[in-house]
Image (cartoon, rainbow, N blue to C red; front, side, top):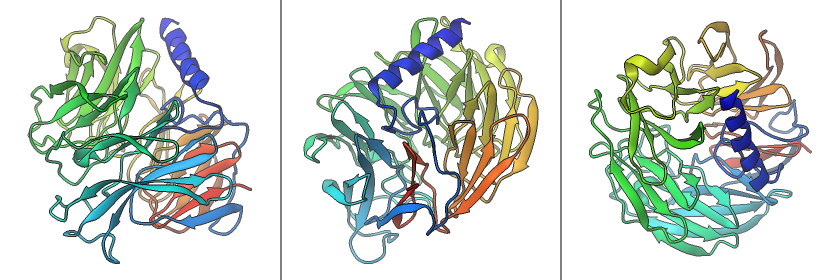
Length: 419
């Protein structure tokens, strides 16, 4: 019951700060994939039930975010016609669109990227971390290229490009905000670290090197999660070889659980005293880890309550709905389990390969595969498909949600679904 109350209060705080129609950060207002709206579209296609569709310049896989009637996303605009070209200069930009009609409100260049920048994975982009909107500010992150804060008119307030590091395959993890701190992981090929910037001026508040782990491949792309355990806040941050808990205000390391995985992407989720962590490549394992207020050091042997080794996600984050845990493998196999024990209830194919994280609204779970097909299922102990919809475009970014509207970013376009 204690964990239920704490989780409820944390959720209530997020919802108090964010209007119900907003989706101001990765995975929504409460950072767990839940949309607090009255209704969402059930059926659509590339032409049906589409309010607008607009081209997005450049290339980026950051998920769109919604705040106060505007949509924000980032993009990397390459010189020339080939947005996938390797050795070319790029402009790293922030775009703002009117959510009602899709018209451009502003377009601001934040950083210039030199042609000598490291190559990226074919499924990545130079603009993959998702923006954050908070208290009239837009926070954007381009990994090793820099982090910035803009006002809602597109004016740059501060920009920090002094924390360069050596990524492999590009950048992916999104920062989170904790009080006056903007915290993100920089899990590079060598010398990985986690860092907190002062969100008011972009200066480093704390920076901590990752402790050694059993994995030699150091690079990862995960987004941290803030949890509250018996009144004590902890920052949960997975990386290659281990998941770490930190004091979010000081960066002090609290505890860790080790594993063999690397290139970790999914964002952890908390439920009733368990935090769910996927361990990455080669073969991802989903762990249910018990979190305590006073845990210290390596708790691998004592705090891992269960593990699932088959069809765990490498990329999409997990989802809790009505006391059930849902996740989807990168191959498109959806699984429903008992969150406290890891017991599998059902496991079914939804569609093709997956990168986007699922969302929930009003008893429906929405998945989105990499070819633009959305599978909508009824949340529950029985697998039931309610709709299959397709825009037939490349889609790696996750949904953004508004009242009666779903925003989908494809390789070249941004859609508003729902009229």
